[in-house]
Image (cartoon, rainbow, N blue to C red):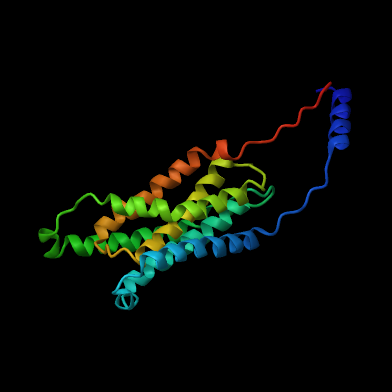
Length: 223
């Protein structure tokens, strides 16, 4: 592009420039999302009714670690999604949910190993549990919708990453809600049908991210 064309481009952009309202800090946006998304999940959990053995489960360290890791994965994924839509922020922020995702996976993996090496494994067959997948999808709809409305206000610098992180935040939160009313505690089933559903939906969200966050290209006539 020649110097004259560059000057004309700058003049055209300056003439069409509109006031831009600065977005709140990503941490505040994540907090707002977490509040709204949690409210929607809690409403569904209360509608279906909490599991009768919840008090007992909260006394089990592995259950608490699993739920806490999933919740922290959701929180950090939400913050990372909002950070990835802000120009100039460090790339490492996009990996913020990874440690908690690993802890979540490890807690399920430890439970699977305990189950498979116990006598109970011989009496309980692994089966298909599409109910878990369906419930996670239902629980994540409102959080995902809120997330995508909010991230569209940022700059789509890395749309696939942003959408994937946003979907991870929504589905991980849905998995947390599911544990409070769906009495499925077999670790192998949780690993495949709950954690697996979270990963599949996250991948799907990342794939459609570019479509959900298109760049807006103003037409600059005569440049």
